[in-house]
Image (tube, rainbow, N blue to C red; front, side):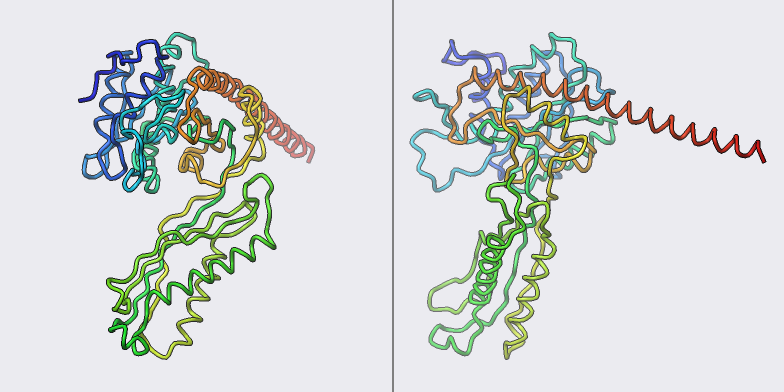
Length: 419
């Protein structure tokens, strides 16, 4: 039984944000399950502060995104974005109940404490302060579903934002990044290879076509390509590691040891630095697959490559980078890029500056609430200052452009009069 948004936790002397985080952790929002109980709780909490929210559901109405605005929604504002789903706990040796939000030895332990319910809790705890100050621009709360399985929910929320005329100027995504502000991420291409062979009893293996062995050749080629990239680049020192990575992550094949596998499925991915090309990697691997099949004497053993999803690389640069570095100055953190594609979806569709990721929690579920709340406040203030600077720069550039156009028109008119 979940407590109401205004009920008190047993830890009565804990900061309000810690209380809210622990409440969020008690909801089992593993991606395969519904997140509606958590969303309803958040909606009730916001409603108790006079804030209305919009929901966008999945096709089955079992999951929902929540979007709420504090301030004037007609003006460009700041999106505080986070996902409500978490990865499974199956097969893991937890020493405490992962859904209880246990505080032990100054650590908050629970599934989602780091990724990323602590951010959601700190944001919700800051709502009264947001309401009590004259905001220079609105603050949008965007809580999505199914981020862990492909950023599925956020796409629907973005379309709803566009339909309702919401056009944010900046997005802060609260992923865990060890208290460093991240202004870029590697691109990603995820793919699946499905191999079809011919099964037989293992005693007759030479007469069969082993689908698993076919898949193994793809894995060997991926490893060879990775070694080549690690040695020759291209390199970008803003990332760790500073080169593109190729990785085989999931392999499914076989039913019994004495049966030659007829089918095998392999899932793999490329994560590319800005100067690299995931399409080129895909073509190179496809050529290797075609070459392997060409040298087989049977028509069976076909391999099919299919993309599971892509995410473009985001890297700081140009005028948006000025705003990001201003935010960085106020946040007191270091500029860095990460290898994970975080906060995907917002920057290309909403035409915002590239995502800023504010971590408010330690990757090992360690939370010093007062420290992280101060970091959040500094970044929020810094974001406001940065956005003001960015808007001012854009207006100045537009005025100069308009002046040049007017001057050009005047000169043309004078030439016409002189003829």
